[in-house]
Image (tube, rainbow, N blue to C red; front, top):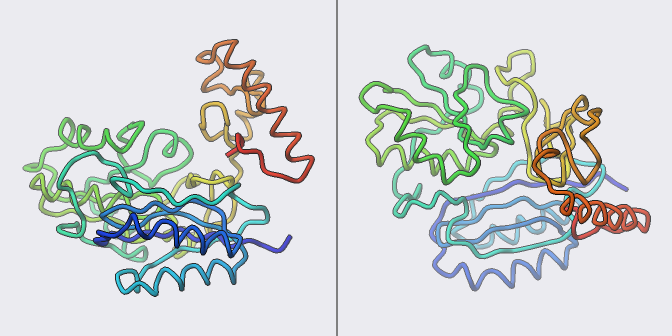
Length: 303
């Protein structure tokens, strides 16, 4: 199979007719054999799609025909096998869920920092560096010196800020996330809370790993991505991690050698938390996944 192109994209923009956009976008993607997920909401569009390069660019051109999305940016990476099993276009209340009413990067947002300027900013001793991602993401990599909020969902981020940070003491705050979208919303929230100097990495970790040479990088480990690649390294090369499809935690090569790891059924993170009944159900599911792979098809339970 020729290499497949993966495009990660998002844009905060007012889309009052987002519900009407769902079917035409889905139909165009299906027509071009695209797989992945796109989210539509009043506040904008977000998602990751994969397919042949010419088909991906056809979809991106189609989206940019809408004047509101004419400057839609995307990040590219390549994979030898398809990172998704099907195509979905979902309608949501938010394209990244924080759950706080009135937080809108279209109204107020922090200062964007280009990847090539990021190292200088986060090397400033007066800057508080926040990783806005969740615990299963920070588990495999983060920036040197970053604070891990240890959240399980982005909904927990506002409480973390309230309980941990002080706008009168933490004068400079820099934040980062996978592709930049959570940081835009997080920075909007923090500006509303009265934090004056709020910065976020433009294009996220993915753009940083694509742009900044490894020898100059302050990134440590891999970057978790929400598809079958699991993690990517500098230059957006596919990483060494796999994923436990019972609990969704990323797994290192060492963790997969554990006696508690059985593909599709358990891993060291969930072995003692999964009932025997659940393990039996996962065992049957894994059998179906393997049978589907032997037939050259993606099993719906594998994604």
